[in-house]
Length: 248
Image (cartoon, rainbow, N blue to C red; front, side, top):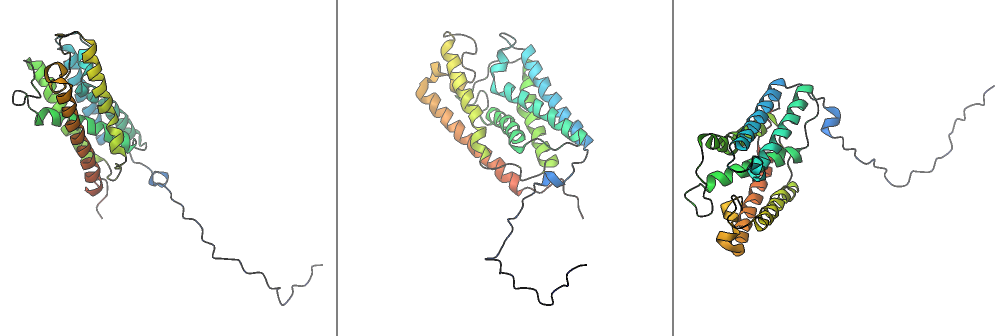
């Protein structure tokens, strides 16, 4: 036998204050299932192959030891881009989530920076950058790494990557590698004997020719230009249209 339900319920104490549940932020990757994009994967694989081709030609046509081109910023950034593109191609082919924007943005930033330095400070026209005589294969490798690879990587970013994945806080982090490379280049030049081939990897960093005052001034100008480039990439990433959005 159950007790009768009282006609009048006792007064309940009011709940103090206004209870507001905290908003929950769910990242898009937690609810969106990535789709297979095999054509994009093929394109990114082609970029990786192009970058590795340029690096290989540089290694095979080096005037000094075969490993000497590995000390150049352009070659190092080309290898990094090739690895990132191979990983991105695998993600696109297997419908995995994309790589972090900080990593893909850094790889793009480095190859674009290397290409701009080569083209904006042309050989033979600036006292800061004087390229030695190059063979046909070396010229081809230079065009691949300084022109074809940056353009192909920029097209991948513009056409096949969602916008808004780069952030301003990443720009100073991207500059750590060029700063470390500057220290490596100057230290390497001090350790090699005077007159050694490729003692300083870039003429505008040649301490023996310009002195530390001018070299550090050149490095400061290049660093400011690189930071401006990084900020520009971030700004463009937040203003460009979304190429992955399907038209309604």
